[in-house]
Amino acid sequence: MTKESYQKIFRIVRSFPNGVVLLQMMNKMLTFAAAFCYIMSILVLGIQREWKGAAILILVPAVSFVAVSIFRSRYNAKRPYEKYGFIPLIPKNTQGKSFPSRHVFSIFVIGSTVLWFFPVAGVVICLLGILLALLRIIVGVHFPKDVIAGALFGILCGVLAKVLLGM
Image 1 (tube, rainbow, N blue to C red):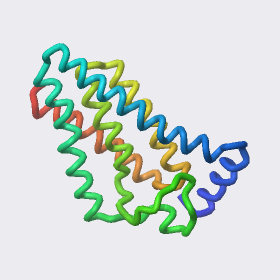
Image 2: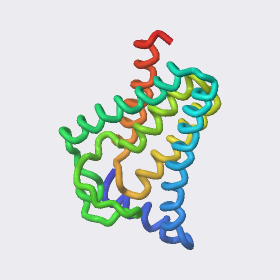
Image 3: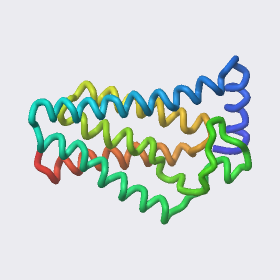
Image 4: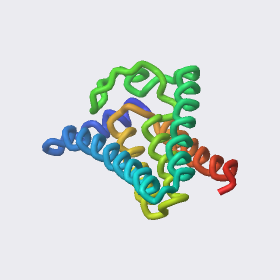
C-alpha cells in the first residue's frame, strides 16, 4: 500500500464520530476474545483430563511464537508508519519487526490448533483473525503482506504440528 492509501483510509476513519476510538477498542476486543477462547479451550481439555491435548494447545503456539519472533527480529522489516512518516491510529512506536504480523500469526496459530479439538471455537478464532488482520492494516501498523504472511505462517504451524504429532 502507498502512503496515499493509508492517508485515504485514515480520512475515512476520522470522518466517523469516534472512528479512531472504535478501532482502538476493536483491536483490544478482538485480541481479548481470541485469548478468552484459547484459555477456555485449554481449561476444558484440562477438566476433561486430556493432558496431551492441553499440552499441545499450549506448546504449539508457544514454540511457534518464539520462532516467528526470532525470524521477524532478524528480518526487521519497516512498518508503514516508519516508511511513510505518519502516526498510526493505535498507539504504536515499535521500530521494525513488521513482517510477519505477530498479532495475526498468534491468532491464526491458536485458531488452527484449537480447531483440532474444538472445531467451532477454532473457526471463530480464525474469523476473529481475519478481522484483526484487516484492522492492523487499517490502523497503519502493518502492510497487507505482513498480515497475510502472519495468517499463512500461523495456519502452517498449526497444520504442521498436527501432522508431526500424528493427530
